[in-house]
Length: 107
Length: 114
View 1: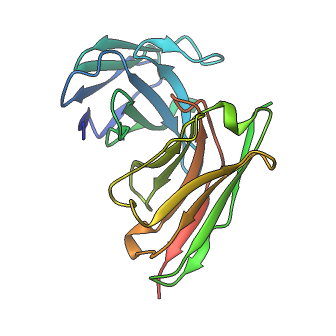
View 2 (view 1 turned 60 degrees about the horizontal axis):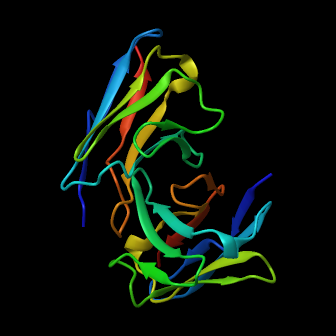
């Protein structure tokens, strides 16, 4: 199975800050990497697919980059509604695997 | 509008069986990959199973031989039959549409406990 190592596991930032989360795959996954946002008690929501494509309706302050084994997810200006846990997920190979999640809080 | 509604969760004793349902609207389940993803209390996301549009099915090693994914095109519903349940199967179970997972249901909680 492909292991997805996501960091940090949690972070605290101020409103308006730039926030960056990284995800490293244990082998080359090309660009088959997605990012999801999950609020407590809610289902996850797709934000970014294929490493860098913004899902329809998702604010442009969210972005993703990378290919191969190293990927980055960025919130350019953190907003209060961005408080959530974010997960990366690879789908290059079965089984699809998720990173451990990054809990984002407001400082 | 695409909607997924899961049902069938509950409290079950170890060794028991449950069948989860995922009723879809706004699209046909036979046209999309449909997956089950679970989340144990306070933990991360774990893929469980997928049924492809062509009908092929795949499972996580942790559930292989115990869980079965299927669909009923006439009811536009996907199922997850769960047998020989264990305490470690306790989780919220989500169904998800497509790959990547474009849409998710609200989840249904399965608790395996005596």
